[in-house]
Amino acid sequence: MRAFASPAALLDAAGADLGAGEWLPVEQDRVDAFAAATDDEQWIHVDPERAAAGPFGAPIAHGYLTLSLLPALTSSLLVVEGVTMAVNYGLDRVRFLQPVRVGSRVRATGTVADARRVDLGVRLTLHVAVEIDGAEKPALVADAISVLAG
Image 1 (cartoon, helix red, strand yellow):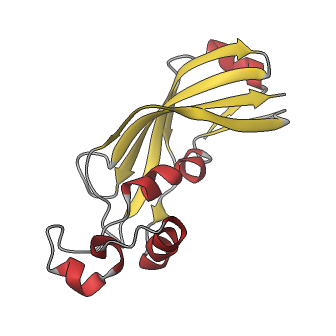
Image 2 (cartoon, rainbow, N blue to C red):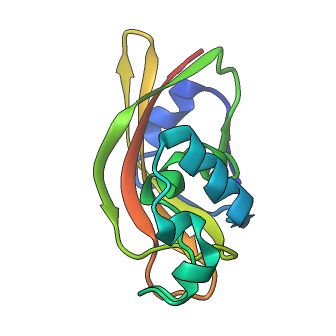
């Protein structure tokens, strides 16, 4: 985990490699809860028996579930001291490269792509890849943008 003394300390961090975060298991109960919350109960996500005979050989997590895990996954990449408020600003260049089978573990790797002053503080862009344990290519890549006040 990379530590920064303040949001302003990020301003000189463009290009900094943040390494890899902690592994997070993606289990069926999480997939089922996401399906219920989003009304996306397609069988490839919520019917393990049918999904086992389907194109992925197992149920898979929703792509948007994997994307929604970015805050949890990136929390083990960096810590910024003195933050009084952090808000999501958006995402750029999101690509879903391969599905996450239920029972897999995922983690984020990241790089500080950009950091600049804005009215509320510092707008931070992290280039993030969500890796699947044992897989050669990531589940997704994205530029995650947040604003850190402090």
